Image (tube, rainbow, N blue to C red; front, side, top):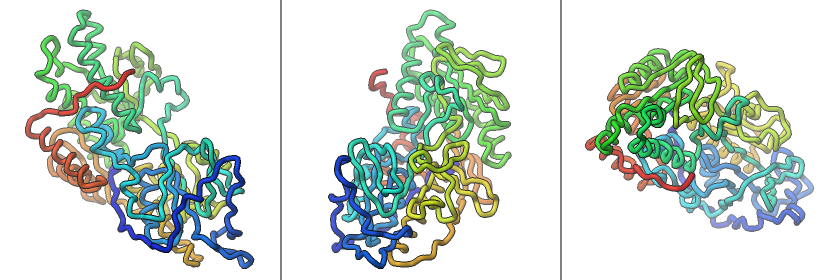
Length: 464
């Protein structure tokens, strides 16, 4: 999927806006009242607001950051909360996991992104709940009151009821995941170099990826190129190009959300790289020895999960119904029907497309567009406007890369494959990275890899 659409909106500062230190209160303290606001966030006839409305955004991903930036010129106070202090460009996370990029290349400190928005406060903490009646967000040791709340908390891995597989088959959602997977992949080659048992060596050099969506396809292609190009001359005992890479999916073809022609092209490209593509087959068991795929058991040291996700517990926090993926069903303006001052966006929201009736996909462009829409909507409500337009998603297309000069792209009815698609994919990813340094570093790393067939971040760091 084209998960890369992130752009920095113009920022502005109103010097009349106060700082937001008073927005955070200890848990034991009585939460700040919301100045008698009506349910729609406007001041009631019996209360006069003395401070601008407080907007709390939970999550500094694509959606949360876009919402904060859309509020740059609004007469509000903004607090953005995230467990981490950085914004992560998830579409390139797999390249960190396969030694193509460094973690710093795809991250940007949230404070740096929002540094010019003086009315915006960044708070690093973990949200544990929401009291919608009192209008407070619960942190581990504090509470923050709000007038408007935007939940952009994303999703986590789903093992479809087999959570015991998580330890053996990690997913890829964070920098910690990426560096751990990179360590596992590189350690497999290191161990195989000095392994005398042929069966054990084959197991070490077998990599199984479960799920053939964009992440699985891109990971499989990247591991194949790592083994057959970057590591080809680094070892003396083993032949890295003999590594076995298996991509497994329960669907009929890779990239099932893409047009059939592009999915078939992705399959051919992967097979040309030496990847075994198994479709219409399910994983029945994962243990320390390998994976049971249909009737076949594949001994494998490295297993990577990219088959599914489940939304964050936002529905539980709000006490509202969720769909079978845990997403909150929101209204046409992305608000919770019973709580018009609460908005849920991105992977956490079940938003039905106006034309097809199907929920929008959990991809970066959806989150970013919803965040920008909600930020602008809150800004208009603060000005006293009452109309709430419907959010409309603009699908600019989808793209996925398979390997060197191999990619597939869809822009409406236009379908592009091969080198032109690969160049487009690279240009889009570089363009929408946050920060000039990141763009320069990523473009330089890709150019070096293209010219030399090498990957410069083959580092085994950290401990298991």
